[in-house]
Image 1 (cartoon, chains in turn cyan, orange):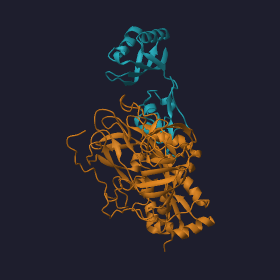
Image 2: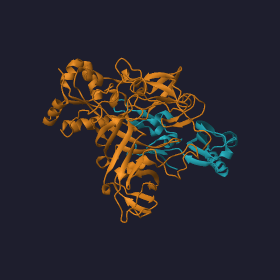
Image 3: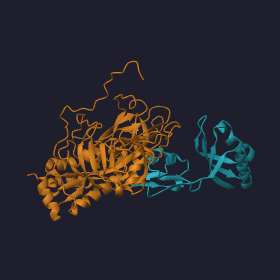
Image 4: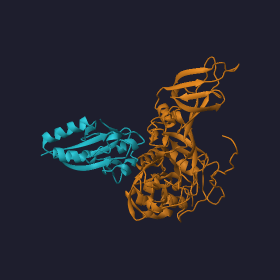
Length: 135
Length: 404
């Protein structure tokens, strides 16, 4: 059984297509939705964990590419520039995956990359531009 | 009996002064009581680091040959609009200034990648800045155009001057609407999705001197890594608000205007920032020493996060419409726990002000004083106090008729 977490960015005209349904029906993949931001007339973001046969997984990616969906692997995509971070904590309130926590005594903000689902919310919100998403 | 600032300065010069941070003072007073703490401790250092939008700098860029009068023309620094309406070559840059061609919120929410605050940070870090200006030319200032690189070290004066910093307490921002909003208090998720606060709480300067007994005009401070001074009370100073028994205000109250030599400062403590959908601004690091003149000051400086509370304000309606309405209250201890309860819902909290950096500043100022490098000053005049009738007023509306 093959498993991988992927981030899908799809253009606004794709938002109403039943992509996940197709992944499940046509490629027999198990999916777990880690995050979904789908707003009509805007670009959608979907973070999925896909499980299934590796062959089917590759075919599914090919299907997504043909549909003009941008695909990124999730592993270690978001990084923090330690020189820019001032440890304010604005990322904490916005992160849907609870990847940030405060060290109690020092009040330093810890970034747990293993919890990160690479949605990019912190990248947009960080006023110091300390968070970077690698494409 | 009490001590005087002169006596404390004598001890500082001899290297004998007892200096602690406002965080350390909490336990000292808890253990020994305010009376003994007042005898033992000479100075308590405070600190704060966060976005302070009412910040800026004025620069004298020097004259060219032939001379140009920037006043009355248009001047930019790295593309950011600056104010040139002082004489010929004095310009003033504000933290929230933007470039004329910045897309702003045309593509919502705007990114505001570079603004006045970033120019100030770049200047402080010694980077070259593009000065571009056009003017109309006079007999004494014939030049009409200049495109030149300037650098902090070559300027005559470069002065950070912030009309309103050091807010004594602040709001907790939430969003009661059903759509995400982008504010100077950060991105607020719909339906009480998060709650953002902005104060160093127990380390915050004016919360440790709630009635402005020692902090006043002329107080020497740590400003952006250099030495600065409180130059006046800040704009929107509002000392008359309701207060808790310990004197700390329940809503935003006092403010201070501060000034200091930009050439002494450090980009570590002055950072240009971009708030999604709101704009650009500057984060400023400030530390204020509080002389422990008596038992009362010992008690004030022992205030802890449990004893300071802030008002929860809806930034989707109440704030933008200027409605004075609160959704509830929370203490800074509750806010720092990471979750508070609002209208029965558990809400994640986040700080905008960096407590980590506030601590660093309080420690840094403590080390300056201990080394004998930094003496305290007596305020030359007091701020309007809690008993004064000084108030922060909204604009009186007298609309102009029949015209754009």
